[in-house]
Amino acid sequence: MAICIFLFKEACHRIIHPQPIKSSLMIFVAGIGLIANTVGTLLLWKASDNNINIRSAFLHLLSDAVSSLAVIIGGIAIFFFNSYWIDPLLTLFISAYVLKECFSILKEASNVLLMGSPKSISLDKIKREIESIEGINNIHHVHMWMLNEQIIHFEAHIDVKDMLISESTQLSLVIEKKLHDLGISHITLQFECNKCSSKNLI
Image 1 (spheres, helix red, strand yellow):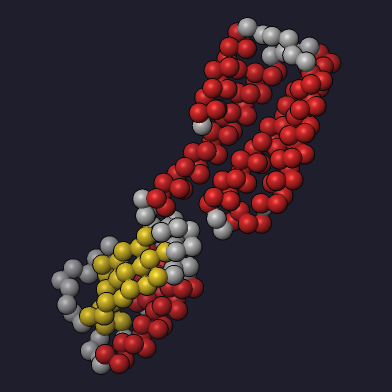
Image 2 (image 1 turned 60 degrees about the vertical axis):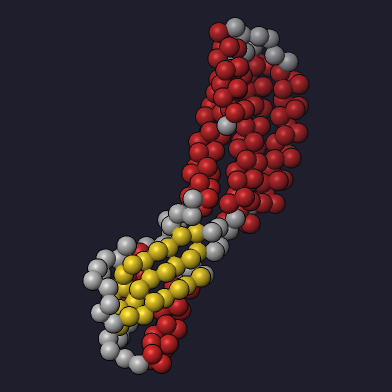
């Protein structure tokens, strides 16, 4: 993000005060960058879905590859038409794109660092799934948070009909199976029968 801000400043300066550019050197360096970044992007592509760190590196390399391609096109335009303003204009567009990707990664990383709830799991769906199980009156006092993308913690009070403790064990297994299927890895359930005065989900 700091580099993007610096590039914005430099681009604005070069738009006001255009400078001659060696287009052949520009194309050559960007060509090397395009090859290296494309190879790196392909290597990280499959693993980028399951890890925020790998996804961040993947997006970084992808944006660099796109930037290199844009610079090559700009270099060709400068070579043929001496349009030196294209270089700072490309810098502005590329920096804006990289900043946008930075903010999306930063937002996601902040949610993990603050142990926020995962956006991909619906509490309303969990409520419907669990309350559809025979013997359960309602689920309430739910807490759900992430330690990272793979480890999601879940706590809840389960209000059940009159039953033996041994019967609630079987219910626990059914609930845990449903929650595991939704991607929740660490589950703590408190079974009770008409104990809490408040039955709010959260």
